[in-house]
Image 1 (cartoon, helix red, strand yellow):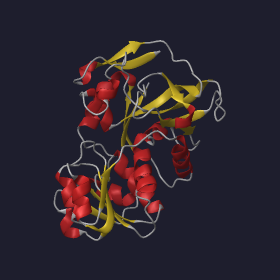
Image 2: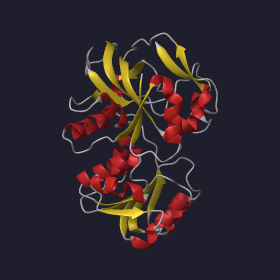
Image 3: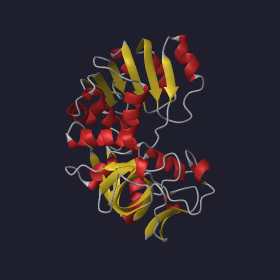
Length: 313
C-alpha cells in the first residue's frame, strides 16, 4: 500500500509517499481501506516537532493522522460489531499512533462507528477528531444544559462549526466569534449571535456566560474569564495553555481547564446518529488528492480554514 511517512520534524517536504506492507488485523482490530482522511492542526504541530511528536518520535516509520472513513476489509479475533464490507469512520488511536495517512489502516474496532448512508466518506472523515472534541467538551466535560449561554471562539473552524451545532441541539444560547466573512456561515449553523473579532472585543458585547470554549489559549483565556459568571466554566483546547489557569479561574469562582480528546467508539455512534438525522453536518471546504498532502497541510497551517480539509488516498 501507499502511505505518507514523516521523515523528520520540519516543513511539508518531510512528508513523503512510501510503499509499505498492508497492516494485519490484530485481536480487537479491523483493517479499513481508507476512502478519506482529514487534516487537523495537531497534525501540523506534530509535523513541526511539537504536540504528539514526543510520543511518536521512536516509531518507525511515523505515519501522521487519526481521522479516517472507509470500508472494512479484514476483521480480527473477538470483533463482533463490524464485518467485511462495512462502511465505517472514526478517530484512530488518539493520542497514540493513528497512521491515518495511508491506503489501509488497522484500527481498534472500539474506536469506530458505522458510517451513515446519507453522508459521504469525506463528510464522515471530517466528523471525527473535530466533532469528537466538540462533543466531549460540551457533553462529557461541561455537561451543558438547555438554556445555558455559551461562547464558542473560532466558530467557523473544525471544532467550532461542530460545537455550534451540538450546542444548539442541546438547547444552548450560542454566540460564535469569527471574522466578518464567516458571519453568515456561523449564523447558518444555528448560532444566535455572531461577534466579529476584528471589529469588536467580545468582552465588551457579551457577559454572564455559563461556558466559553476557547480554541486559542494565550491572552484569550484571561479575556474569556471576564465574560463568565461565577459557577461557569472555561474549556481551553490548545495544549500548553496559560500557566495558572486553574488558579486564575478559581479566584473568579469559575472552573477553568484544558482537555484533550480521546478515541471513543461510543461517542462516534452518537455523532453518527446526529449526522444521520441531519442535526449536525460537516462542512468540507477543500478536498485534496493523496499526492497533494503538502498543499492540504499548508491550507490548515493558515489557520483560516472554514470547516475541514480532507485528503483522498
